[in-house]
Amino acid sequence: MNSTEKRIIIMRIGIYIGSFNPPHLGHKKVIDYLIENNYVDKILIEPTPNYWDKTDLANINDRINMLKFYENEKVQVDTIHNNYPYTYELLNSVQKDYPNDTLYLILGSDNLEKLHKWNNIDELLKYAVIVLKRKSIKKNAYIDDSKFTYIDDFDFIDISSTEIRNGSDDYLDENIKQYIKKNNLYQED
Image 1 (cartoon, one colour):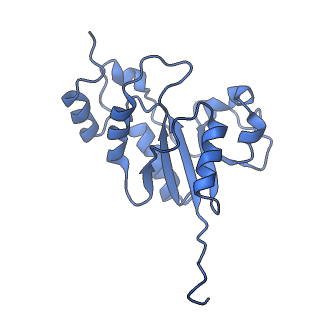
Image 2 (image 1 turned 180 degrees about the horizontal axis):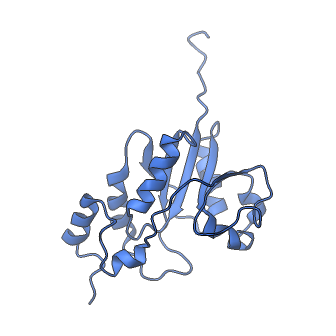
């Protein structure tokens, strides 16, 4: 390779989309597991500004600030592509910034039951999908495509952000606990 040629590095980039309201150790476990087990080279965390079915979200800037505690050389909180209303639009936008890389949408298997209802599903399924087994959802009932990587041996932490907002902070990183306290997030009026 001469000095004028650029080396193209092809990476596997996991796209982890969610409300992260607040981010908890279950989210961190997903991130760590996928990196440590070499499913992806890098993860972009995509906090959404809103969800069609969620009305109690903390301010997006607070959720981004809390997610920043998870950043390292292989994990980045993305604040550029997270304003798209649909997942396929977000993936298309990220792909433009990473044209030589393979994007992997990261999902829990509980999302599979409704996946066929997602907006523009055919466009979405142009991308690879990593599905982490959650609860008793069976892979064969919903997955019939080579684009899916199904991970059976992942052990989800059975906690929800709703439980944390209701007072259970056992599954929060200490930095995030302090951020929530300092900024009076999730306090009942």
